[in-house]
Amino acid sequence: MTETQTARRSLLFVGILAWVGLVLQFYLSLQLSLANGRTVPGAIAFFFSFFTIWTNFLIAIGTIFTFVTPKSSAGEFFSRPEVQTGTAIYIAVVGIVYSLVLRELWSPAGAQKIADLLLHDVVPLAYFVYWLLFVPKSSLRWKHALWWLAYPFAYLIYTMVRGRIVGTYPYPFLDVTGLGYGRELANALVLLVVFLGIGLLIIALSRRRARSTDMSSN
Image 1: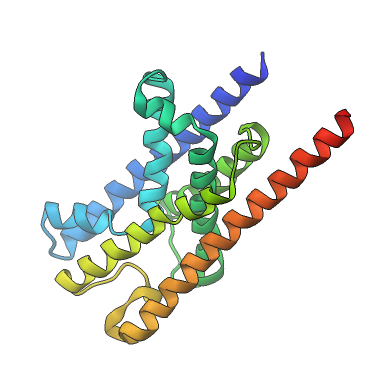
Image 2: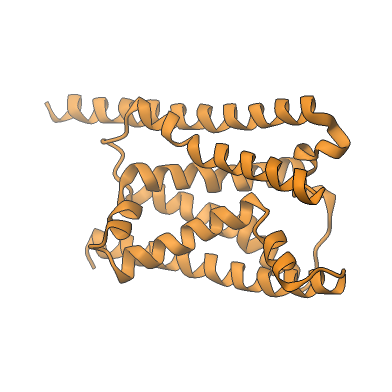
């Protein structure tokens, strides 16, 4: 098996894990939302209010395009090293923030525990390992660190607008009701700085590795 085949199969494996976690979480979330009086559209909107869901969905849908229509514009887009690197950063932040801030806030059990582990631990680790082993990094540039902020920035705007309309927020550190706009904006800024810092660090390490490889080859 060639390295390319191994990389493709590894990505497919991660994509399948993401889909399993998403489908299971959607089923559980739909049941809970309906039990709490939400409508089906309201339950779906609540499900897609979480950064974890959007980011796992990004991996899952990207895998489909990569394998089913690799020559399409979407397939080529999701195969680009800078896109896969950005995705690795996003899903890494999912795992880091959940472990440091959110994990202690609840104690899932049964099927919910499985979904929780898949979306917050297994997929983040598996995708980051895939990125570390197989995604080319020589084409990464400093400007990509700014491009990678577009996705979390769009999510933060979406969360603020949605929260203003429905009165609920997916994460306690973004809850205007309890924190006020000043504290929420400060927390949002911290998150963007974290994304930017990780992006810059990855680019710096990649460029340093590329220079070391060039020197050793000479």
